[in-house]
Image (tube, one colour):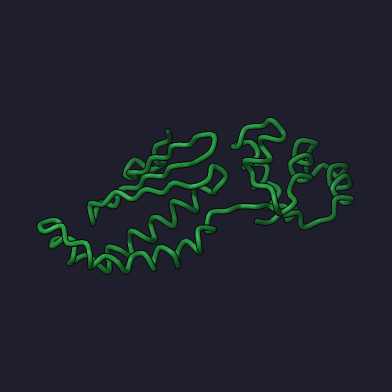
Length: 162
């Protein structure tokens, strides 16, 4: 379980082998939002989406919340389903599949120039556009954080994109 980076954030992240649970508390509305997603989804994107949903919900239904807390009347909140579907892009908003921008034959030349090392090369070769960072980390027996930092480096060098 990981707490939010900022002390004022009320974010909790629970990661397991097959799924990730992100819990975000929205103080103005006093509502707890929760997302359950695949383990290979991008957590930062999930948190951003939850913040968008919570902000939009609060702007739309700020006056309805007081009524709900006294009467439990939920029918006014049905419009949020459409907003969630639009913001989440059909459940694919946090999917990350890195793809090589350069040919595989060019990669050894980039290694020989010293821009990337052999470890970076192994990660780059796995970037087919169909494998997630989690799957790459499992195939290479590396930690997910190591693979993510290598992918960020490769993205900065314009070798892969997401």
